[in-house]
Length: 326
Image 1 (cartoon, helix red, strand yellow):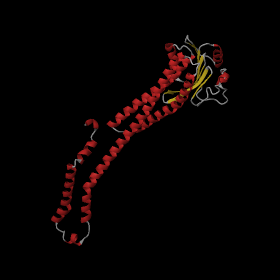
Image 2 (spheres, rainbow, N blue to C red):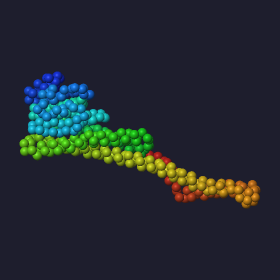
Image 3 (cartoon, one colour):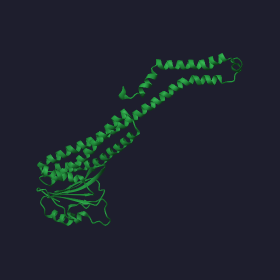
Image 4 (cartoon, rainbow, N blue to C red):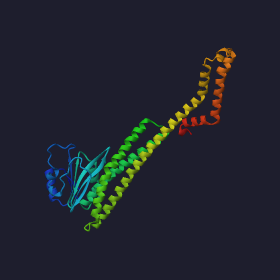
């Protein structure tokens, strides 16, 4: 619990938090629940005396994205990125307090409370927007970090392609999908709720700046995530192009080998036939060396000359060379 605007932080039991929520004029309360919910666990809203706030889902595990405003209070389920996973922080805001609930540790709360002395929020709504802004920042940092990693992988692929790069690209693509899948539903419901609230005649104009900054940040974060998805798709396309190029090089080499050995195979098969002329007339050693060896050498030299004149051999050697050596 943190009393505002003094910024005094104190730990306490649920009963104490319930009493402070009922009497304090400006308060921030954070409740950390066990990571796994126990069977028969009483509703947290009942323990905190919030039955009248329509938040029976408060603290419930795997609650979907939510942004509800009823009267002078609001309730949100805010997603945030913590390392490689997405956590959800439940938030209830009134004109007197901001209550957050999460299961297990949530570094997001520590980042938000660290900003209170610097930002000096004027009321609980300002604290809420600090929470929403910091949640968007966790997505932005995760998206930018993954984007830079994808670009580094793409650059490394063009220097030297390795199978491990495909695995890392797949992992980063799943990360981009996770960020987009968890943020977009929340962003849509939050944008719809905030828009309705702004259009209300009773909306306070001094809070318009908070709404504007939140919208700008959320749109920038979504743009970063979409950029990450596009970059990951482009990197996959680059990897596929490199694989196709290598396969084309192998096919070209097989074609060259076939071109060289096809005439030799024909001569071998032809002179291996048991025709009377071949067995009766072509018996001398000179004829053997001339036809069996001379023709093959002649065909081999002709094939190499054709490859040299068409520059096909040079093209194959250039494909094998390292791009950094060019």
